Length: 301
Ligand code: CLF
Ligand code: SF4
View (tube, rainbow, N blue to C red):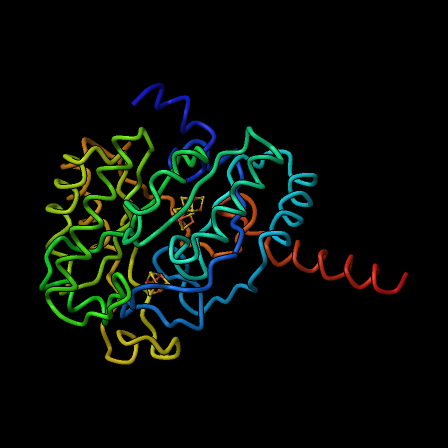
């Protein structure tokens, strides 16, 4: 990887120092998903990054570009444009790539980012490369098909819906092949893992070891958020959230495989699919209120 330090120094998620200086915008253009995670209620944003229970209003690519321009004019430290839902960006490839292409044409110095479950990475590697999407997050919760069956309800692969070990094996293999392709193409890869007590908590070292060997840059371990009111399978079946001690242990396990805490993200805010601003200071509601006021003023003139 060339000049990795220079390439991440303005990315608030990949570089801990950068999150104190730089902002990102998520453009919510991707509604569909091709798998079903048991910690996700599809009424809400993709829980692989976002908090369950948060809903983002969907935008068309054109509306997304308008929002980007408006926010960029108001926010001098905006450095990253990301797509993180509300579903899986690559299950909505046309809208995702159209939006990122327009964003890059609008301002080439903005870095492009997306977060995916990884199922369709190989299929879209050429578009990812051609658009110069430099940062990609893949959610890898397990590398064991039997564990995957406890975490995912189904996978839709090549038009067929799988609920069995065969589907889990194909899913894990495609994730792995996709990650390899990203690394071969010099894309900086982050892996998100949702820490689920008693289900994948004993597998964190193994996941970190495997992704490190594949050339992944950073591992982000997020705590499961599981409340009955979110209507997720885990929430309704009392699958519990990890304690802070369990989360710390998982991150320590990861750091010992990844080569230290520079390669384990600890400042993630599990933000919304329409998040705007610095990681600790989401301004999406403020900007959406301004957007609504501007539109209503337009209508009245
Ligand atoms: Fe967005 Fe994700 Fe890109 Fe960051 S978020 S697509 S890598 S620009 Fe960041 Fe938010 Fe955590 Fe994600 S704090 S949920 S890690
Ligand atoms: Fe939900 Fe994201 Fe999982 Fe799809 S990949 S089911 S949107 S958490």
